[in-house]
Image 1 (cartoon, rainbow, N blue to C red):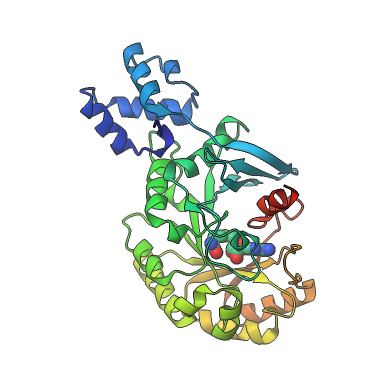
Image 2: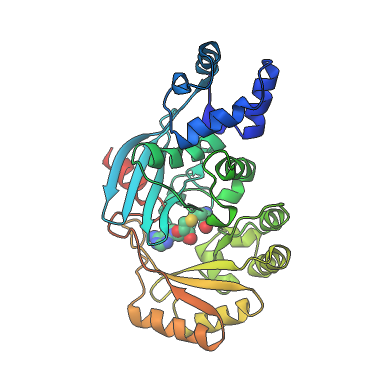
Length: 342
Ligand code: SAH
């Protein structure tokens, strides 16, 4: 079977050319054509002789996912993609004042089973390959004709449960001969796989980290996020401190505000204590209501009161401007709607 060329790092392509007695420098030419010229066919590479582009066409595809459904408003385009095996994933293009950002899915389904999240309703079927994640971005580049400056690993799936492919994906999209996305412009969001956070911190080039925290004590977090049974808050706190210390990066704490569940002043005080020694910014995000769960979004007053407590306790905190509510951009919502229809 042919391999999707987007799955190869520059080093792997150099090795490919060396193996067939060609100058490995051709890998750089190929990268330029794939990612900058956005070619659909190898025969479009004028700097490479026809016999070799024919061989490339025999060995590789240049494969994009197929869009099954699109929701858009002026700042957000959300796509439901079908992959070669008919698996469904979602990607979101967000137009921000600093440039375009893509929210990338990392797995087909998700095993983390968070109580409020639609993605968890689809059990993990498989990991996405690096090439499939790259092709989510290339779809935005080629079909929507958009420039991409930042990437968020915040779509369906748990990136640290697919860490090897994520590392490869990061190597491909940061390559200076290709997309050249800055390492600091890629955010990895995790529900808190503590040992993997430590492993991430030990990488030579580390991406910014976001933690989906959503609860300030183990009792509540166990109920909302089953991963907390495996890695309780104390262990997560140690991993976050290690990440701070090792990378000098601050951490983004995501905290969705759910009415009367995790949005009380008591929770805000507990959260302030928990984060006291962590270098971080807390993003307060209104819960995006879905039909599948009874959770309700916090009223504005609760969010403001929560914000004030964190501020008073010297925790850096922001309220995220909401993008995507109208296009059902919360994790797993579009896929869920599509699956219910059929
Ligand atoms: N598994 C990773 C990546 C998913 S990111 C993680 O947990 O971080 C998706 C983010 O959207 C997570 O912070 C998740 O908790 C949040 N989310 C899921 N459902 C949501 C909803 N209905 N409203 C708002 N945020 C939601």
